[in-house]
Length: 82
Image 1 (spheres, rainbow, N blue to C red):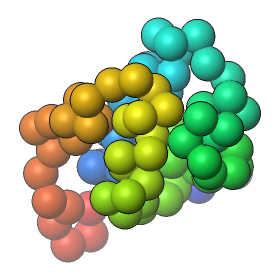
Image 2: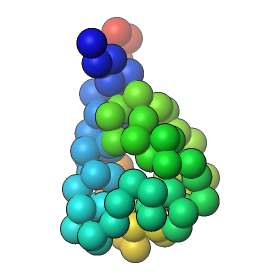
Image 3: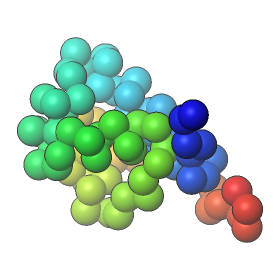
């Protein structure tokens, strides 16, 4: 059984990472290489299972060739239980 995302915000960021990765024609492995992270981390972020920090956000955006704002624009702080 698949684990649920840790929050709505994590799910949305993960969806945006996946969308940008697909638009760039990158595999998870290639994005991981470009971002300097392990490919399993990319997978976990895309599924909303990891809460990543500012430095990783910047690494992902750089690897994807997008402005970091594209990944977080409009997100709200998670509320308790969300």
